Length: 92
Image 1 (cartoon, rainbow, N blue to C red):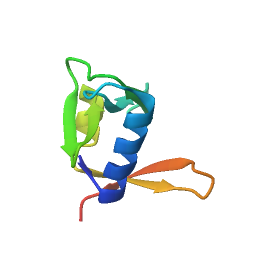
Image 2: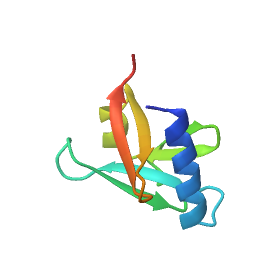
Image 3: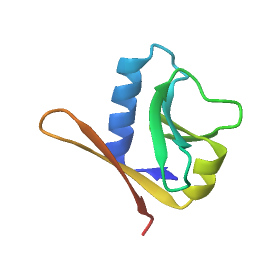
Image 4: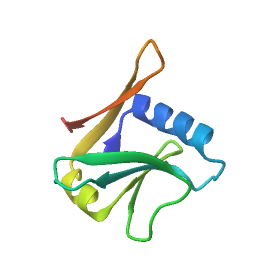
């Protein structure tokens, strides 16, 4: 997985607000079905997680998510009301 510049900025901002840990980041895990993912902000990675780091943004992928998203690009949009929407696409 790679991160767009926008996703890196959003991940860093969310992680800084939600955790005081310098080792914290966004964690993506497969939630039941391989097509369903859960996203959470965590203070540290799980031992089996894969770390994706870009410009200080840290994303942790559980083993199933790492496999499913190996060729993916994570992007983020911030809505006018401040809501964040993450999207996953393919590398071009």
